[in-house]
Image (cartoon, rainbow, N blue to C red; front, top):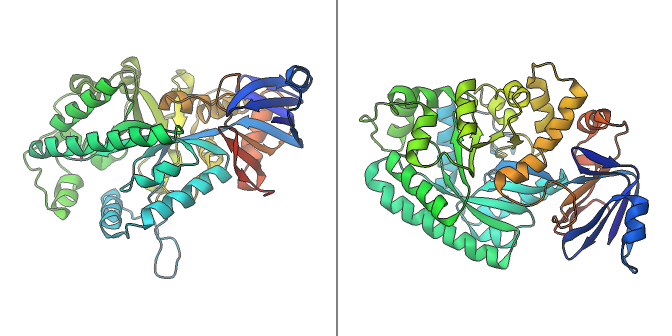
Length: 424
């Protein structure tokens, strides 16, 4: 198939007007100026034309929990986010313990369709309670098997469970190549040092990326500093656990992660709201990649990621929505706009928008260790077609961010197959 549009974005640095993409066997065969592609494409390829539209690399939502639903009350209205982050965690725990087993698959299916409808083709997914939905995932996904266990005596049991989940995900990958496995020590306040070291070793031994929620809230930072605060006084007592013996990490976060063997190429750190700039730089120097989730952080009153430093220091970062329990939708367009509002540096807005588009495409794919994020020969045919916003150069990316929403997405293609089509 050849897809033709008024504009083609190969990546954040290259656009063509008009442009075209030729697709064969799920991959990009040709991508570039319309005339060049049509001249070079083998005879007999059918064409689909989208006048007034733009072909873009599929968006990469680098941090999601697709099995967590929107939390609603008896009347079906969304529940407000609790003012205390600990209350939010307890809400998620109660949901996971009380949900109908069949709901995990239906939640995943609905969330996947929503993500596709916004033009996302790839996700960094924290594995939900049910691994079976990933067999039929329509999204390209790095699915991180999650481990939670703070006490030393549970480390071996949790490690075995994560290892089994990784094995299951690798079997799923053999049947559905869109899905690849990863390892996720949940957070530093829910994963003790023994389990953290074991999971770091597992990820390294298998050559898998690891994902860690880090420095998301002030209550987390208080607990990591000295073992106090609401995590110790409310969260753990609510689940029947005693952490009174914990007195804090006793060293900086970068040093702790390095000693545990987790700070290496392939580690993905999510949120990082409450890290100082020297800590961010040290983590990046150790090989870490970052995912920022500004709308989720704002919804929980947890503060905001330092978008200015990431942009001005040229630290690659990706963007994620987090779960539908935290944000109203799975729109990376809204996430890009939220990140733009946080920038306080001197980069011009239009140039900033180009960088945020890069964060939502190629940086996201790279952070997850997955192909895609750009449209080049040999890359997977993962793309979305949206209403053309107008403008040239950096101005195009500014118009794209300002004007694009769910209603502007005409088609989303994953591995050469239509996954969302408003005309269908």
